Image (cartoon, rainbow, N blue to C red; front, top):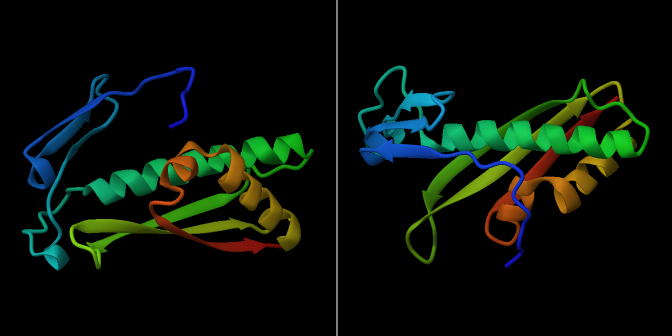
Length: 145
């Protein structure tokens, strides 16, 4: 397991599991949770799922990693739009797992450049990509200019 030099720590507490509430220690994130109807839950309005939170975090983190890599290559990826779809379902071996589809779009960059930058961000920089590697199927759709 890789060791890290901690730069920042976020802390959140959840109560009630998937039908409860989660909140960060600083109050910046505070959401009610509900199991969606598609998973047999009540699907309460104005609620989120852990998958919503993971998708939002991964999209933001990947966008930052892409921007970082682009700057190293003297390119501008600040206009990139990252959409992260996180799916949940039963695994063949039991339990549940997630899968990710990452849509990266920046028509201001040539397709080949954006593809290379996204690959480097995924393979070397993004902490979410590093954490999911070998555990979660992450697929990319990349749309450049």
